Image: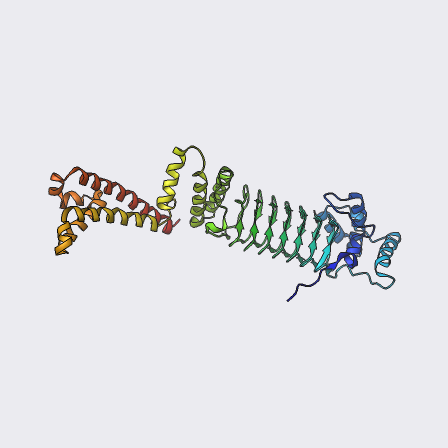
Length: 428
């Protein structure tokens, strides 16, 4: 099935209302004086028919003057009619303010500036393409805001925007910086499967209901400094190219991350120090939320970063800790270590004491060699001295060294096995 062809913004009724006095240009900046005049037309059209108390409410939220919400004057209506006639001809009908603002599958070739604009109806930008900047700073969406599947090619600004109903950015693609700092999400905020190619800034944003980032991809930094997550927050199967910066945030007890290192950045010597700090903060949040499995996962990630910091004498103990026990979480690694601690000396004892029996008679030497290796592996219980005391009184030096080494290694691996069991099954 072929993709639907994009519609030019220049032929769209609502785009004409947003650009009555002219379109914005292209590039990094935009004409603020031009936008102030265009914004007055938009807000007057959207809010002018409402009572004064309601207009004051939306003016306060959008941080605009009350005069911007008053009904359009005759001169302003003349400018609107001239804009529509210029593009559409004599036959057109001005949209109703409560109707859906329909930008679905529209391509915006110039900067789209809707800063401090109030969208009274549902705002549908689904699958729209913004080839220049999309500027919605301090915009107010009184109904559902739909940006599902949209593509933002340049910088995207939703800083300070207010979403009073659901905000849907599911499957959206942000190819440049995305700013949602200080945005307010009153209802569900859906960023499921969204892709952020560059940094995404949610600093001081407020999520009052569900915040869904499931299956999203943050290829670079995701900033959640001082962000408020006041309801269920879902980061499951979210891929992070860098460790998210979640500092001084408020997190809800129903906060979910994926405990799979494949979704998290591999430790890197250049970013190890900052990553360790960010993981440490996540670990502290999980501790407060009484989520021990998540807490230990972030501890393991933190230690993997710290294993790249400092001199080799600082790194070596941490790396050994990771190799032997996955930082106190693995059951398999210490179990393999215990098995190897028993098996290798067992074969050595078998060959040294009874090679001829193994070769010709079979069977007889297996039991003593097996028992000696077990007793030495757990020598801290005293089994080797109790059952093999006579042997140790006349044993050669190599055997004394091997059994002693077995006892040390057996204690270490058994300790880490117990630590893994504790961390897997502990209760708060």
